[in-house]
Image (cartoon, rainbow, N blue to C red; front, side, top):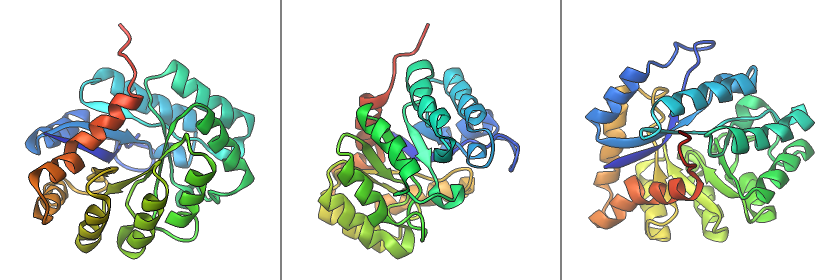
Length: 252
């Protein structure tokens, strides 16, 4: 089986609304057991409303989905309260930040306040990375350095241009995880070799990536020149480890 650690839920404000049945059908065709849902509308509008949208879909299909919320760090105390609300009152297991789209510097004072609170809560922070100037791996490595109890996931492992930087960041900081999602084949091979298949997860980017692309991105992992056990860790058990760490009991 496979765990997809990088998918999206579209709320219908900026893109066509996600159809859960189509989503689950795609997962079944590709033998994907569970997907991590990342927000989108909340990057541009009411993040609390979008967080609740993600949470509601996870509640409908708790065995198939886990979810992350998002926060606008410029919202001050409201942003800080959202960390506690999501972690204490919803089924969301962490937070996705797209500092390039959200237009904030990851080392800005406003975001440092969120990272400090996330570190106190030993939270999972998932970042878009690989897009200068606000989403560079070395910037996110500085967050991992300052906040060692924060689990930092680089959602694209650097993309084609910055995968080397993402590798160096992960080698230096053991609270950094890399997600193979849009990472070039040669980059995935070198990262897997240097990291021994540890702290690496796989993601499709569906439905930002088309359904047919999901199958091809799974094949990319199978094409890597490593043992089946290493590929299994990337496609499944590493992500399962994170889910076990952060998942919450289903409320009856």
